[in-house]
Image (cartoon, rainbow, N blue to C red; front, side, top):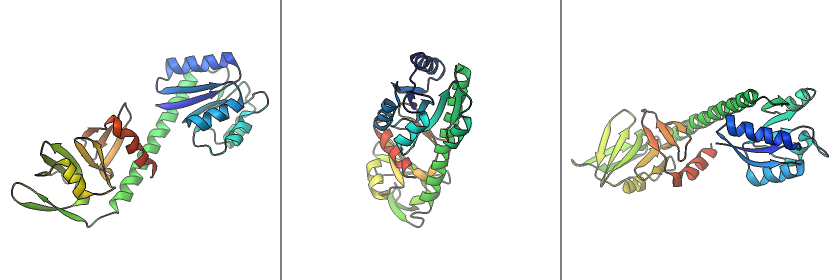
Length: 247
């Protein structure tokens, strides 16, 4: 979900943007509609949006001046204006897009879709960087785990994911093997004891370097390198996303 703040002094334009987003851009959540630049600055600082729909010409302060007042910009900006003379200034401001009023629903929808694609590419790049970073750690670390026959010694890096099976745990290995060990998932988690792994669900403990994709949703789910899909528990989603932000 893209969290959006609208900064627009004209009430008719405000209503048009809100209605268009509600009808054509279901994956956008409007957090606030601000009628002045000062209100926009306050809302941005309080709400941390992903996107700001920003009018360029407003009484007392332009959209460009408002962005300077905000300071650190960690959100995308789509400028809205009745004039084309500001295109170059918008480009220099690293704006994501520039839409001319009256804004056509198809143009706004297309802009939002491009933003979503950009976010997906960025998230995938984070996963690639994460996997590369994690794969370089603990390359030679091995642990011993009990099986029905005795003990097995395995490299931690070769574990793709661990799945709870009551009092047992199935280890899904990078080479496709499945190993059943006589330990609970909690005990496996304690044995591995590595920040390279994360408990995404009561039944699943995954190697972060083996994640191929993260798909958004109420909790979201992971697609692993072997094609397996694993749901993320809602109460673990925020912590999981914070881990990604470190990379």
